[in-house]
Amino acid sequence: MQSEGIWSTLWRKYADYKYNKFERFAVWEMIEPYRRPKTFTALITIYVAAFYTGVIGAAVTEQLYKEKFWEEHPGKTVPLMKPLFYRGPWRVYRGEAIASDASSSQ
Image (cartoon, rainbow, N blue to C red; front, side, top):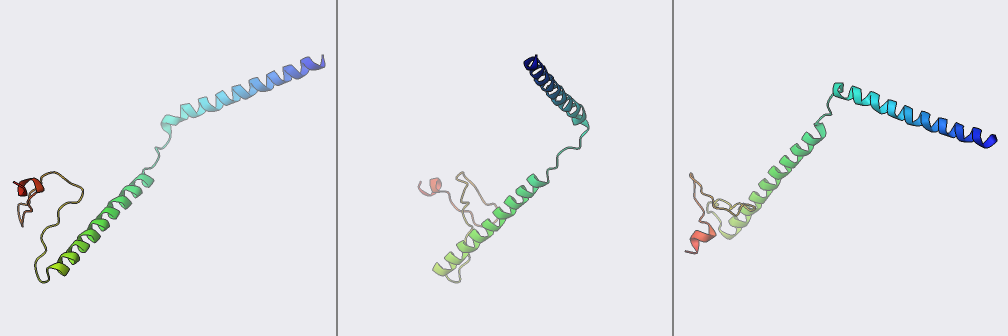
């Protein structure tokens, strides 16, 4: 008799646990459509930081390019810097155009 009481108590506790767990999730699933959406503040902060990191990196790279050119050719105007990460064709409409490697070898 003693063992039956323990098993029935355990099963009752397990059933209560499962029911309460279901009840908690059911309530939150009903409330979910009415919750305020999560903010994009962290994502926007990362994007802004990445953008300005790129801007600063480009400015530093261009300044180093100018200084290196002025050391080799003092007093001359610095030509446009070729894009580092763009390998395709490109033209400059106002200013000096730099010939691409394919057109200069022909």
